Amino acid sequence: MDPEFEKAVQRNPHLGEYVRKFMQENDADEPVFMVSLSKDIDSENVNLILPVGDPVFIHLYGTAELGEVRYYGVEPELNDLEKKKYDAILNIVLEKSASEPVPNSEAELKDMISKLLNEAVNVGEGGAIDDGNDDAGKFAFLQKLMPVQKKVPLTQMEYNKLVYHIERNIIGSGPIEPIIRDPYLEDISSIGVDNVFIVHKIFDMIKTDLTFGDEKGLDDWLRSMTERIGRPVSDSRPIADGALPDGSRINVIYSLDVSKRGSSFTMRKFSDVPVSIIQLINWGALDCNMAAYMWMCLENGMSIFFSGETASGKTTMLNACLAFVNPRAKIFSAEDTAEVQPPQPVWQQLITREDGPPESRVDTFALLKAALRSRPNYIIVGEIRGAEGNVAFQGMQTGHPVLATFHASAVTKMIQRLTADPINVPVTFIDNLNIAMILSAVYRKGKFLRRALAVEEIEGYYEEIGGVATRAVFQWDPESDSHNFRGLNNSYILEDKIASTLGYEDKRQIYQDLFLRSKILSEMQSRGIDDYYEVLEIIVNFYKYGVDGLPFTI
Image (cartoon, rainbow, N blue to C red):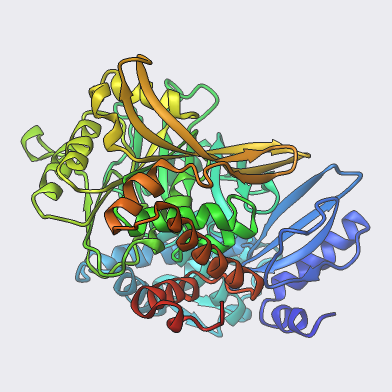
């Protein structure tokens, strides 16, 4: 056994028990212990244990015979007696909590639970309970003992298990805690009690073994989660949407009246650290030239929409590209749910308020109007859906660059949606938007991939053609899975917008600036520099000192 694996088993006896039982029942080899995963793992031959923070582990198992990867959450399990002790301790903790000050943070809540838990148990005495031959008999003895002691006797192992389960269910994510801890999770979808699926960054869609037990367990969990976002669900209000304290976005459809196959939810997890542009290049979402083009455009105040269908990677691409915005820029963001993560220190984050009386509600439209009065260098709109789109275009007209995500699978469809109800941007105003990046989740050679399909420049409305003229400067080739730079010496934005503003005598010299940035990105890629903050530091130093600020020679 790998030394690290052996240490993990020593710290977590339930892991060793799980592995032994799995190997025996499935006639399988011992899993490989891996602290990180790579994208080249063979899904037809995978058997590994991934630690996600003691005492939780993920087991991924797949063979050619199975034809799929199976996903198992490994955490301490409670036997019947431990479940009874858990209920007794939880009742004591909840009863005592009524007289405690209301905690102001998760850390304070955790400290309060730890204090009350320690007041409710005697550790080291649980092993002395041998009255009765079964768990029911032992718990009957416990019930007689507890009124005298007013504490639940526990062994050290029981204490460790119960601490985890109480914190998991009160502070953490309950039954889906193993999934939430998985750094390779993209989103979770659940329909009913047992159908819990995830989208994995390496293995795509996988069904997990996690369950909520029964309908009551699922309903209780959904009510708890929606109370955390301040939008509790009920039979009279069965739909809720919002952000959890860790930034994950959750959408809940509650009640069998509305969701016939059982209450359901979808949760999108967002990393604390955004994906870097170099990681996206490594994954093939775009290439160095396309990234350098975005760098040039964001450096010079162009307005850009990141457009595509659901789960096409719009917000991930937007966050990665925000590293290209001048570090001295003043940023305002307006969103329904906090998703964008600009690295600029001067960032005002505005969030809508949908609850309460009508006069107290604040929508994206109102946030954008407030942002425009604050003279930002960039305005970021999490997603344009309605009348706020008109305000965004007014902001562009007054010289405020706007970045936004948008639901449309092509630039023509994007323009159709912008000029129709409920957004209603006049078609003659469309050229205030400079660039549209079109993204999609594509199925290629048996795998789902996220790709930037095109980058299109918007020239403007021409009566003679009866519409808006656009120019594709980058196009994805599905055959070779590569991006073609069609805008070389033919870019309207680079030559007529940026080069003109910078005062180039020969506008085509602008391409030398683009290729310089492309070389910088390529050098980072070849040197394995893909951490978001390392990439950001190099870009910031280039802004300050030019090529002299780079940690390598170009």
